[in-house]
Amino acid sequence: MAAPHVLALPFPAQGHVIPLMQLSHRLVEHGIEVTFVNTEANHALVLAAMLADGGAGRASSLDGIHLVGVPDGLADGDDRKDLGKLVDAFSRHMPGYLEELVLRIEASGGTKISWLVADQGMGWAFEVAKKLGIRAACFWPASVAFLASMLRVPQLIQDGVVDDKGWPKRQETIQFAPGLPPLHTSRLPWNNAGAAEDQPVIFQLVVRNNEAKELAEVTVSNSFRDAEPGAFELYPDILPVGPLLADPKLEKPVGQFLPEDARCLGWLDARADRSVVYVAFGSFTVFDPRQFEELALGLELAGRPFLWVVRPDFTGGGLSEAWLDEFQRRVGGDSGLIVSWCPQQQVLAHRAVACFVSHCGWNSTMEGVRNGVPFVCWPYFTDQFLNESYICNVWRTGLPVVPGADGVVTKEELSGKVESVLGDEGIRERVDALKDAAWRSIAEGGSSHQNFKKFVELLKE
Image 1 (cartoon, helix red, strand yellow):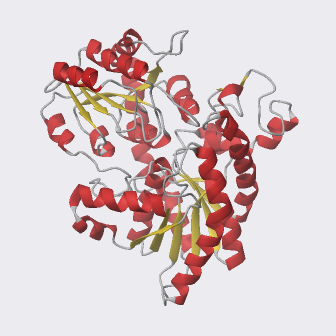
Image 2 (cartoon, rainbow, N blue to C red; image 1 turned 30 degrees about the vertical axis):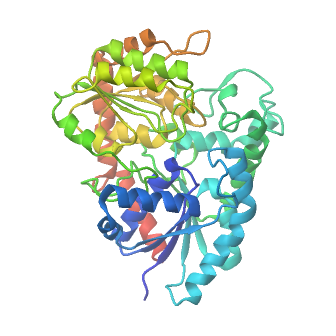
Image 3 (cartoon, rainbow, N blue to C red; image 1 turned 45 degrees about the horizontal axis):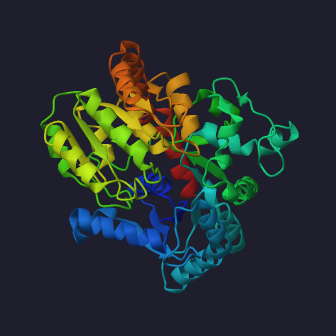
């Protein structure tokens, strides 16, 4: 009997590609063939980053994962961080391209596709799978509490919390179940995913995805039971298989869009244990020049060595290069290192890292939890506010920064929160306990380990 052949389809964003690639590596270890489908634009970024990070030789470590790209419906010059435009384009164009890909694979003599494992954000793909007679599994890369906020849309409309277009009708804090983090109605995910004019498109995507999810036989998530017991009580059929890890040595490529600057690992090697403030805001966050400068000055004011990831598009223009050059001259060398992208999983696993100033994306959250790193929380959009609430209000493993009346987080606020987090023994104890729980879940016999085995058995049926 031929090995199962899985088509893996992430939502086209960095934070969705990484966990599904991690899951794909684990499936390959268990004798499952994987064709990993990025959009053509992201496929090109992944290949370019892999070549830059280690030459063509790194591609061999993908083993049974075949990387392919399909068009997303946007033109070459379009802004793919405009979520409204991206969602509208891929929803209309990608179903046809995905169907063509499946037929092309099978016509070329390749192994027949037996399963689609698609991101819940790509609900249209479950409709394609049904049409082609392919079994489907739903992959959820974020917290299950975040998924709950979307699955409860009909209830939110019925209760008069939001209208039928997703706009809040009341300003209040809601909690979907005991143990889930509270969420203000202004922070509902579809209201914080981009420009206000994009909100209707994104809300309609949520509604469609909720309906299409019913076509999947199972949902697996990058979480673990002890992290979200209330959420898994609410949705007992969802199988947590996280925190996902491609391989224990963190050597396998996980679909980075930017080349990783590995020299930061050598720089960390020269720092003392738990001395470095690691600062990274993911692939979407953009700061205006004033906020960028306050952040930089806050790191300098804290007086601790820092490693700061500054993407080329992090400020969206307007920052004085002369100002940044002068800042780097002042803090360079032992005091601080600025890189454009880094191997974050290796960084967070490094003994020198003391805390993580983070946008609180779920991948970053799980990586911080797995490595026992406390957080200074600075969310930007979508699920990040809910994750901040988990970190600060439920797990109590970090503290939030609080913007001033003008919306700017000051240098004093940042440096003060760094000191508070690092000086709090209670936070340190809770961080260590949550880390232990995470590792227990993925160890032999742990709940995530057992769920992953169930998933593999289902794919092999």
